[in-house]
Image: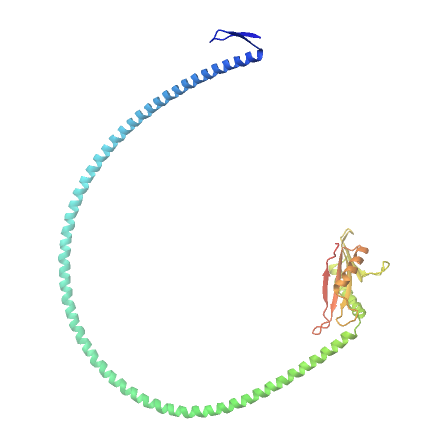
Length: 337
């Protein structure tokens, strides 16, 4: 505990350590604030003094520079005035020479104008004389041309009359020839029409024969024919395009179903790089047990998985009326590949 005397009332009182430390801190903070304020005022005063000194120095330098510029301006103004006086003197001298030349040229121009007027009058007189002579000659030439034109018109009328006779004769001949050509054309058109009608009838008969052949051709026969065609085509290019490939019939039916052909190809190290299950089907439009191509895909995918093939391909043989032997190959990506 500390005993403190109040400076105002003179009464003593006691205070604990915490209160004493707080009062001491307030006193110290107050002194610090006062010292800081005094130092800030001194710094502000020093700054104002420095600013005033700098301003005075800048003003002095500006005044000195302004005085130098004024002197330079006065010197240049004097030079400009002297040059202006010299220029005016030179202009006056030049104007005098130009005025003399102008008067001389004006006199020469007036003389040329008088000479030209005299020459023009003489030329106009000569031109009138020439025009009169030319007019007389032109009138005589016009009379001669009119006489020749009249003679030519009479000769033309005679020639037109003669030409009309020959043209009418040729016209009659052309009419006869045109009628003959029209008759020949109708005969040729009728012959061509009969020819094409015969060809159309032959084509319809062929179509009917193909339809009958298609109805009598079984799905199994077409499928086997398609298998043979695919095997022959593959063997034809095997040596050149697939030297290490395997393309043989699938004879393993232990699972209850099988594909038609299996294709496997390996790299030089013997590693398999691709494997495909092939199924050959015929799309016969008139069979009672016809299935859609999509009906074979589920079974084909099952066979692909059982034979451990990466892809499955459905090959179709379409018998068209216009192209009965053309084959169409349709490839399908496996749903689970």
